[in-house]
Image (cartoon, rainbow, N blue to C red):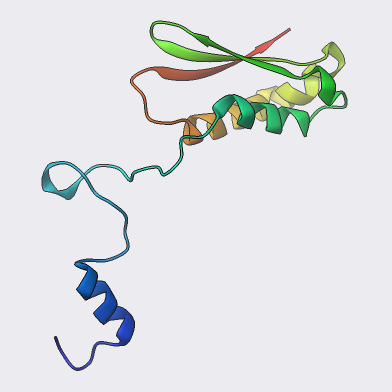
Length: 115
């Protein structure tokens, strides 16, 4: 090793690489392993409860279909607008977070807001 390496560089070299994550597949490509599979239904419930006025009426149910895992979100009728947002921006943001946090799967992950 060269003399101009500091202790952190030596530690990285000793471990056989850098701290960019665990790579899999041919050529070192692939995705990082996720340590814990998140409970997507609980994530949706958490976000919805913090948006609405009546958190006791928030319900999330998973419906497994052939091509998709569909999470049905049900809230009080008076809170529907808060979950959807102006122009659907809040609903789109909620769906984006769910897509990002959902474990990798061959099935699509969808969020439906029930009326």
